[in-house]
Amino acid sequence: MPGRHFLQLPGPTNIPDRVLRAMDRPTIDHRGPEFADLSRAVLRGLQGVFRTQSNVIVYPGSASGGWEAALVNTLSPGDRVLMFDHGFFAAQWRRVAERMGLVVDEVACDWRRGIDPALVHDKLASDTSHQFKAVAVVHNETSTGVTNRIADVGRVIADTAHPALFLVDVVSSLASIEYRHDDWGVDVTVAGSQKGLMLPPGLCFNAVSAKALEASKAAGLPKSYWNWEDMLAFNRDGFFPYTPATNLLFGLQEALVMLENEGLPNVFDRHHRLAEAARSAVDAWGLEFYCERPADRSDTLTAVLVPDGHDANRFRSIVRDRLDMSLGGGLGKLKGRLFRIGHLGDFNELMLSGTLSGIEMGLSLAGVPHEKGGVAAALEYLIGSVP
Ligand code: PLP
Image (cartoon, rainbow, N blue to C red; front, side):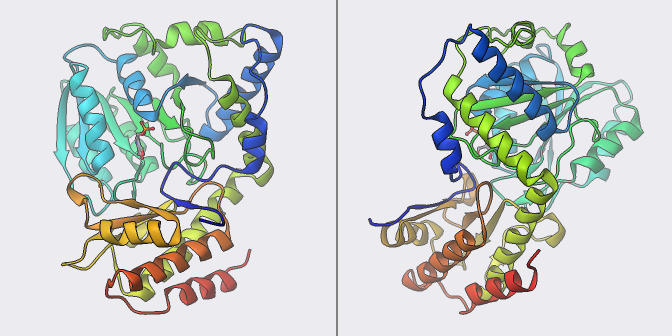
């Protein structure tokens, strides 16, 4: 099809031309001084994005590898982990934990709203013998479009004085929604390259607190590729214990410059404003948000239910085949029930307008009942909220 494909998944996201150009160069000697300069710059820049003074580890791997790395470096076989059934990705992380030989205590939650920090408080306060070695939460559940209040969860963990490590997945929120690894008391933050960082898939990250590093000394789960100790020892001189994803690091360096130039607070404001505009469109269409609580709605994606008797995947296929736009679908038990609009990363007002236009056309083409005027409502919002 002529023109550009609209990649409006909640990740992978659109890659800026600047990042593509930065990666389009010969791979350099990963044991030489030029590489050491590159990795030092990238590791320093990442600390700013994660809002941490501690180490950020970069692996060649998808974010699922980052989940595994967070667990195997901090825990021992049979350790108990407190997790919450709050979405598809939270469930995937639980599966990784169980496969690693951990014992997961999963708390049932309503997928349509954020985790109640009071629930975390109660679970930890009643664990007087400190059985839980870690608490794991997904900041932004990409399957549901719900954002959790990590600062509040971190606060209740601190209030209980429970020694459990706090592990947080920011795969679809980093560099898009405010996040503070140090201030919010997080011990391991897990992220990936393909969303807010505007890179292709292929890198994952662990930001590691001093407490997590201390815990890693006694952690008994087997590990080799994911071993923090090896990685940190090599990183000290600007190197990696194995062949790094050098060209992705070129791209990351450029993406970090772009984020710094825009300024993280402005990046967050831009995401919020575009998300509000998208939500205005959904409201005007008269469609239902999967996330029931407005305050919990994500600024990086919006999950929209289709009315009963309609298939969200058929709608998505029509949008893809006729209009050349990819939207996210329902995952797991939500298959066919909703579509997800990605509005994160390298994204602006006109890209959003095109995206919403495609959805409004697609709803008509697919015969999904809706009111007209979603695009107009979003444009009104954007006009009225020019920074
Ligand atoms: N966590 C969240 C919140 C995600 O959205 C995803 C993927 O979309 C993952 C983890 C897994 O990431 P990956 O597919 O890169 O392994």
